[in-house]
Length: 225
Image (cartoon, rainbow, N blue to C red):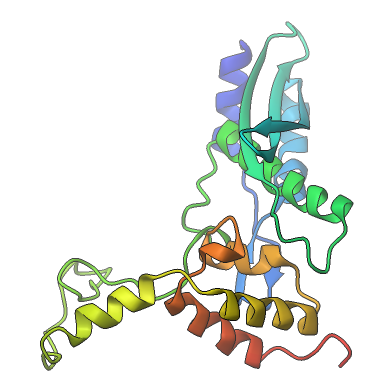
């Protein structure tokens, strides 16, 4: 087998279970280490090696972690690689610089591996906006039938659209500070909230998402407890 045939075999056989649990978001997910552990026996089988590394790159005025996953054929030394980027958060409250970089590095490496091994994490909760989404027309679709449910009572003219517009707007500084105080109270990292809503920074959270995250904070005990 050449390097591409070996990689194809690993892609088809790889099963990376979601062994991690996020209590705050109430979902299971896989991390970088889960994928690497699942790949090890398959790599031995096809006589290949996996090397994952990253580097800090400056793009514009922001620093990004560029992670590269390399699949190397031990017999021919041919290789196939995939890269992924993750941006360091500007808000380091509760974390020192090394923790921020480490968290970002793990995130970037995971998605470099996802691309290399054809792992689709779009359906994972740690890669989704978990707020309720509406299909076209303002109704949720039935995932099994593909049909829309019967329409409920009509909202007063202009009220629904105005409410949706307000919910979609980014939070203001006051709400941002509330989230930061809750993160400090609970001892949670920013990344937990960022992954929950699939955003890169806390400033990107919307008013609608703010309501959701505050409900979760309310149910989360303080770190001293």
